Image 1 (tube, rainbow, N blue to C red):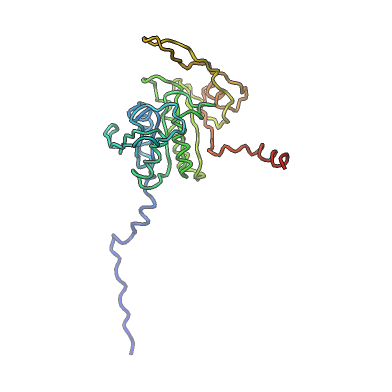
Image 2: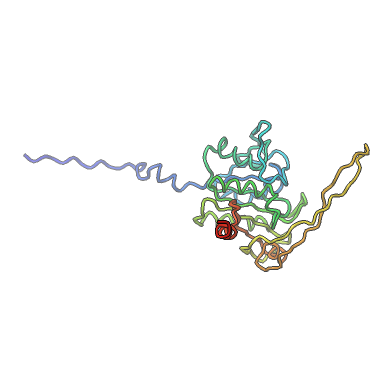
Length: 278
């Protein structure tokens, strides 16, 4: 007896693509933070530059945290408040440091690691030795420690009404390149942008960090009650005259891009000491 074969079931239009395949094409999750505070013009301009490149989530300090470096909060509670300061963007205000913001964003807001972390746009320079003290860059470094490729952006203009037009252009360009490049998960870039008219910017240069620092002085004064206090001041001095540094690039109207790392090991000295100190 010949068995009749069953007709093949017809596929419905909805069965053409599985949800799993569709999710592979979802936009990347982009975490944005800073150290100037969640309402600073710099972070507003950063969001504006990249808002269509992915799902944007902002977690930033509730007040300025410049110069905090890699500080974390351990002696008092941290608080998160959802706010509506940026149109149509999920935004959280945090009572902690920039590094606290990254930690809380990953653990309590996103409940996952974002695809990329952007910090800034800082009001003021973070080139050369400034990277050590910068809350902007420490947030980016913390993300890289958490295996999230990251970048910190700074505009060399401290004014609250600084013109971010050129900065937005190069922020977008660099973020697009990062999203299109298969980067190491610990990648962290320090990007500084000259405070000049957009048409004067010559492009960007991949640079090394210059050996430059502040020759500091503490001015001694008296408050109205006659008590002494000190005010830090100083002059920025560049000891590195090379044309491959961030300081040179910025002085010549290039956007400087310096790859940095959280591994502070001096491998040259390590190898030397392994031979000498046997």
